[in-house]
Image (cartoon, rainbow, N blue to C red; front, top):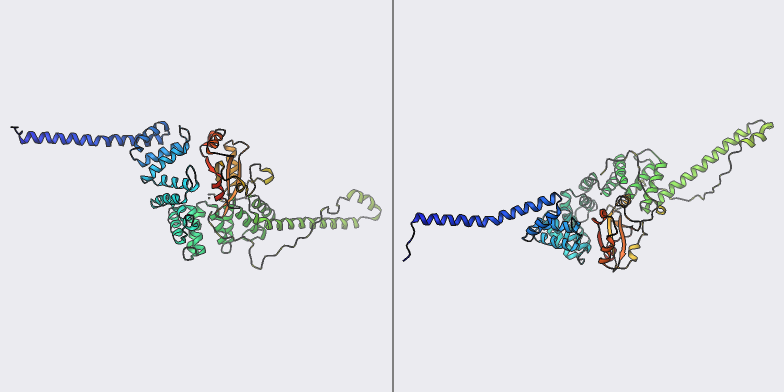
Length: 473
């Protein structure tokens, strides 16, 4: 018969056992917490080799942030070869665990067909998850999907709701789009005051398309303020802003007339890809030529009067010395140009559609490159003639053509890089690419010939995907 221990002895044994069990149970959590700290701190300190080791150990246990950081290491090739597939794998792990930025990045990959088969349905799924977690860019992208019906459902009311959510979080592109929909009464009741509120916020945040849009809204109300916004937008390379600013300097609306500056701005607008500025440029050029002829004729008349006043005995010698005013050598056909209606401003008030800050311009100084001097620019529509099955390396993109040239110089890119123009929202958009390849593997091999600084930002893109997103500028 087993003898029972005293209550005191039993209680002491039981209490000690519980304490030991608690310590054992708490130990993994302490180790896990230390591993978290090692993962996060190593990444923050750019010790990517240790970060990869620590982050993988806890990412495998379901740590969303560790999985996201691990995906970033593989995407950017931080102390490892660039590996989009591993990046996508860990982004999906992080997204499944609720990481908003990982979900957004995964959605973008599906929408662009970057490393995965292109799928708008999958893109919408992950955008929705990130948007519900208050990710502003995901909210804006979701709004665009509902507006365009890219996944089969057009719902302008939902589009406006998602744009507005992103706008309230300070995303300038979403502020411009929400403002435009309010201005046009699309998906929401028309409200010009509320529209100007959001468009102004986007303009103040430095969005070039919002700045020109605000300039259009203010041209009849406050021409001087309208000019200031056009200047800010023009300084960022916006061709429509240059055209409208040229028109205002030409007519003297909101500024003193300045035809030489109007001519320069109109030329820059055309060089920036805004072909709608050509009629204005032709009008200003014609007026300049007519003025030159008038000045020559006036000078000829002045010299004729002087010659008539010289005594007859010295006329022959004086004429020989002073005959320096030949007939004008250029004959101009006077082109009939339509006059604007009375009270009508020549500022182009195109539809405001969505499309990136500056302290304004004291002088309009816009660096441009003419088409004849630009070996990098591909003809419009070039991308549509390429094989849908081939691939290219996309290095960067953006609305600033000057910025593309600076990028080429700063990254020391080879002469074979090219860029083409497309259209995004209300403006011209430029896409810089390198080569054309039959497979992803051959594109990755070609990537090795680029400087290391450029390889970190690349995307290997299927030509068919670029064709889907191409819009004639």
